[in-house]
Length: 420
Ligand code: AMP
Ligand code: GLY
Image (cartoon, rainbow, N blue to C red; front, side, top):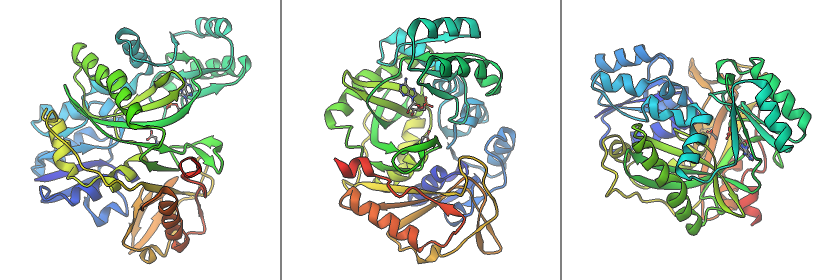
């Protein structure tokens, strides 16, 4: 079967690496891919948001199955367009991707169906939003409703910060994503990322993972897309995982079906494990990056058959096997990220990394046989071992073999699990 993966991040490299190992896959393409993905797939120069270009490519090349990595094309309706063209795809249609595309939609769904989440209000003007903040007080969380590349959440410790955030969002800082504001209770607890494959009616729990969102050691500095992750997440015990499925994932799947928006694809629940149990912070309708890298490393079963089962409604009797060992990934980013950073620097020494460590590429390009950094997050160095501490040691040993003076990484990925 001919498969196309859409996207160009570390997540898509991990997906390509796993899909390429499937006996079902006879030819793998990635649009647009990157310098590392080129090892596992044929890269085609089409942007992930070039929906018509992607449909044309699929038609011209008789693509059997498309796996959509990032949220942008999902929310824009790529899976709907593919379906209209008779091409099977993994990922939700636009009317279900709204779970990620509109925080207000998801909050209302949770309220209607009794799914545990932070108390909230939705506002379309600054005056009513400010009145709500005045009533609730700080600390409080202010969010732009729409997709804002992970930057649309302001954790306001004081009233002044909350009021400024409201002005900022309605002032147009996030463009159309800020036409509406969601204001939430600040949840206290430990965060985890929980993943489930969904086929419209049934959900199959994957594994949980923990991300490291802040740029600096000790969880300091600004938020990023994620600087490292490990799986499993010790905070998600079997008991908590069962609660997450029973109280959050399964009710969401049923709710979306009842609303006439059946969800197919991967549900990524951002959770806060509070003293009242797991609460939903937000949904993403795609794999996490870098969480996907550790999930793919731990997955023993054929990912492609699972993605197809989710797409065509056959997850009910499906099962997946996992390595018991933990996997850990450390992101190497360009100096300056998540602010301004330099592009075009060369990365050397990748050949010195042993076969038991996977270096998934994010922002890289292959130019004249050289690997060049082209993005903020650039590599995800991923290892599996008997313990998180050993996986961490393996990943950092590989990083120390990589020669990239213009890059950096956090040196404490996994600290929470190792400290337990
Ligand atoms: P989001 O983009 O909604 O995942 O939010 C980004 C980050 O903000 C989350 O990973 C949490 O660390 C934090 N966050 C968002 N909403 C809340 C909340 N209601 N309470 C506490 N932390 C939150
Ligand atoms: N690592 C968090 C995300 O992919 O949204």
